[in-house]
Image (tube, rainbow, N blue to C red; front, top):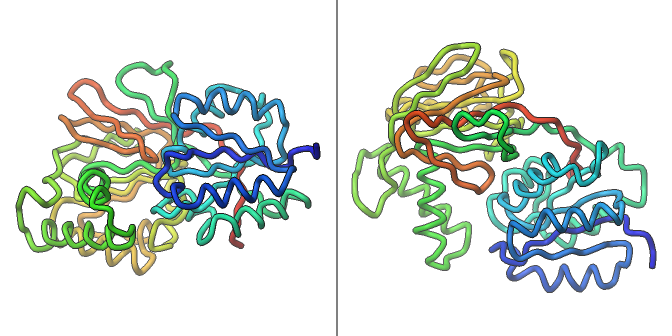
Length: 325
């Protein structure tokens, strides 16, 4: 058997994989230099990576949603399955709004992406490698607890909107694009038009966000996110002012603030110039505290509680494979 150049970790239960996985399996069957390992539950990913480490692949490709990617990154960080030299990670597009895949240029057909990654693996990978900083999340006072690792955290109204889409809209069985349009309309009805109804996303709860260098931001936020990514959904480049690997954006729960924040994002001005009602900070350590408010790190939900803040710090950077130039 030819030595595996790619180890492909697939989660068949990922919604975006349901239609594409038979094609992925057929492609792997025709290419013996791909070692394909499938898991059905997140708690199987650690064992999967232990097995993959013995194959010593040139590249680890993850075929799943943000939650699958987050669990794999957590295992790579905490499990030390690859020692001090984990292989670079690539992510296949899987049909939903996978922010990590978008950041790495993984869009379109997963088989086409896999073909390109396989071609990369047969050459010098250095031209396609990009370093990415990671977020380490810990709950409560357990500073020594095993952290959860990710690249994108959404909180306040953003987390409520993500949960609303996942729990209320996706189960309707509509195409993903239409589901996102309906969710966006619901947010507009609640936030910009001021409508309140049980079929709309709920009002965000108050939060205290402490940025170690710059004090505390308190209030209700229509959007709160912490990311290490350089670009968001509108592909606007985030500002580089300040120091720290974690980028915090908090938009106050006011119509004018939301509109100004959206306009700044569309114009690529987030973090480049002050915007009234929009907070942009860079830091190496952030804590979030509130009562029964949710945050989502790459698909996994965590809840805040009084006296039990969520702590975010920067984690050891990891190498990724970027498909787009």
